[in-house]
Amino acid sequence: MRKVVDNILNNNQIKQLILFAQNDLKDHVTNHAGHVVPRRYTNEQWKYVFTRYDQNEFVDIAESINIAFPDYDIVSVRTMHYSKGSSIGMHIDSSEEKEGLSDHGLIIMLSNPNDFTGGDLIMSKELMDLKMGSGVLYSYVGEPHAVTPVKEGTRWIASVRMLRK
Image (cartoon, rainbow, N blue to C red; front, side, top):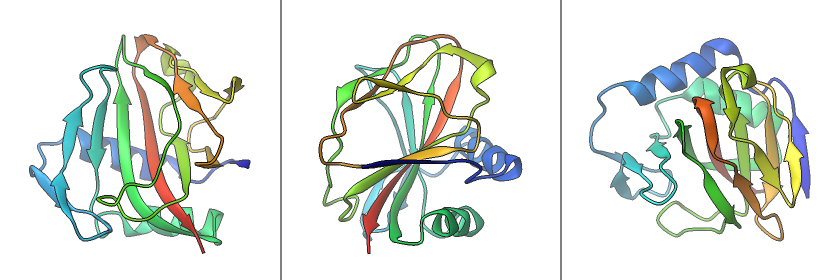
């Protein structure tokens, strides 16, 4: 199951998420499951930077996501920053206890696709063409996905873990 939705977040919300991730943030954050976890880390294999958010940091963004997907609860919100050479290999997401129980993922494009080359989102061998502010909701079951290496520029996404109500 996969669903693409346009205009989940507006330009101001996108700027807010990216600027927040670029700031000097505290080292740890309490996630939606109530666990204290590292705020940010760099994946050494794929070279992307992952930033977690506290559930109270962006209430308006959560409201926009809830309006677009009323049949789901938000479990966690993270951003992923891909610079030149960054990617992520083909994988299938799964629920993680430390993140809270989830069964769906939502990828929201935060970058203007004209601001980077490469960095293509591939889901089950299909190229996903997302506009800035648009996203794709997918089930963890049978939905392998990857991001090809970024050749130029930077790519930002919001990665949201969700649970069907």
